[in-house]
Image (cartoon, rainbow, N blue to C red; front, top):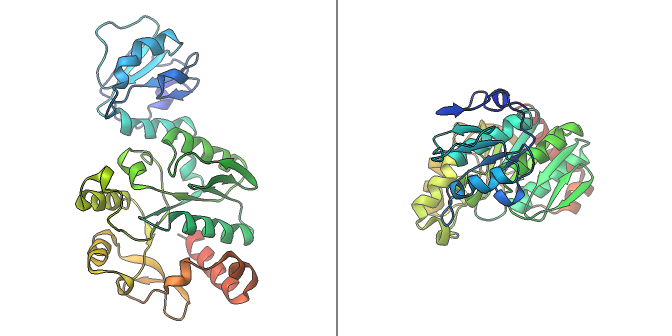
Length: 304
């Protein structure tokens, strides 16, 4: 892909060099640079990627994305200055892989606990209903029947787009993905297009990273801003603190379970059957009533 296509609709401060240069791959780790790759220099909490621009060029990088140009600009290298490298990376990755998150229905599941269970069960539901789907979870990554070992709850955004692009190529219609607060804070979902969000709960875990509960809540809230229809529990099952979080995160319309277990799309406020997202796989497969519920759920998500 050439640079002009790669930066399409991405805010750029300045470009120095050939804008029609071909880019072979995207890299943010200077140790993984290959010939004609694009190296994104990002500022971390410990290391500044700008320090590795020169070594990346020596290894073969011909395009550099950075927040500050080096004092000396190398010949035959294109430099792209942006305001925020970390946020730009997600949009570059989306463009590079053909914006795969817009070519399938991406369902994100966030919350302190239950992300793996909910995303995996939803994957199983859709698989057994006959939909080709992908799964990105803490335990494993699945593209149809293919199983790939997972390294992070939310992989880096280049890897995510690569997986989603492969899922699209193999005909997957849905992708279910765990979205961790660390991943949100580190811009690992930047540029992705989510169709539906799932919010499980929010407790006082992970404060070693987010420092305060308010910052943790803000991270979760920010992840839901661009989501069309979140799948949220009712306040009747929440603590006082969780209820206030729910009120901040909620949007007008949700998918929810009524007390009798019937799935419907309606205004927030109806009861939520807690076990609706905690049912066992065997019950999904063997109980005809749950098969009906799964079909209803699939229809709701499919028509979003």
